[in-house]
Amino acid sequence: MELIPVKIEQEAQVPIANKSDFTSVGTVALEKIHQTSPFIEANTESVSLSYLKQQCVIPVFTKDNEITISHQEFIEAALSSLRTVFGNVMSETPEIRVSHQIKGRTPDALHIPAKDLEEHQRTTYFERMAFIIKLPSICDTINGNKLSLTIGGVRAYNLENLYNKKSYEKFKFFIGFQNMVCCNLCVSTDGFQSEIRAMTTLDLEDKMIKVLQGYDASLHLQKMKSLTEQSLNEKNFAQIIGKGRLYNYLPKKEKSLLPELLLNDGHFSTIAKDYYQDESFCRNSNGEINLWEFYNLLTGSNKSSYLDTFLDRGANAFDFTQGISKALSDSNSNYSWFLS
Image 1 (cartoon, rainbow, N blue to C red):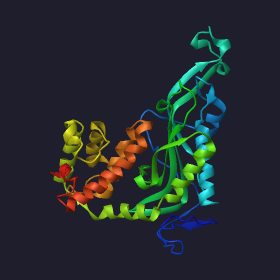
Image 2: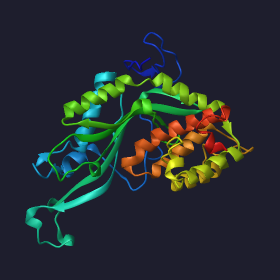
Image 3: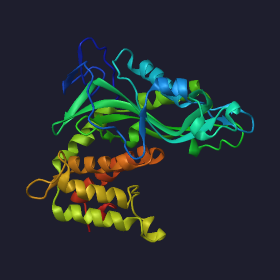
């Protein structure tokens, strides 16, 4: 199955099955959906696409002075791939978060004290950048939470060797959903490419198109909806939190026998706190929490991750939740260690 874009006039339904089978699972008017929080926090700040274009210099590979693919070119290539696959489906303005600012100055400002620099004498770019683009007209609802189809990516210059000659550059790209209640991203491994290697923007765009075309939104939604059918009691939840903290300190040999878990102690502290305090996904009066709520506690904690690990951890959170789901009904599952 594949996601089939629909032409938008005033409002659209979510295509969730075969080309000829469009089941009405939710509609949304074309007005902008206002977010209440950013999709990632950590040490990031918000910038506009025009700021990246007009105010930021572009790093080069130092040995041959060849230019890198800039953050803005990455975003524009994503927009182009979106139009190629989805046609005229309405999308929102890219939401962009950056971190690790690299400051510089023009040659004429070589001996000027930093406090006396004029604006035109300052140069800057950001080592790490993440963006998302929402398609608000393609949506669904899970457990009362509206989800909007979303694409996005991460670029981190710290993963490149800029002190060498120009080579393939690395990008992370995904298509999934954003929970509009909390702005958490729902990323599955099926819609996530952890490393796209490209030499040009055309090459990059072509590879992003393949990710978009290979994504099955119907299957992703089905898997997320199934999470509402199972719950953790307080003992189960406490066991997962404890084992999750132990996981990162296991001997290498024992750890290799278990499924990968990318969340760390800081994430599990946030998850434990939100189990009691989160307004949307906390425990009920019996101390129980369904797996959809548990999954959103995981993705909520992931907002504190650095940009270069953010999407990998987001995809891992979905895999981990699905693994816990299997362990609840199968004690032989390799995820059962987290519940035992």
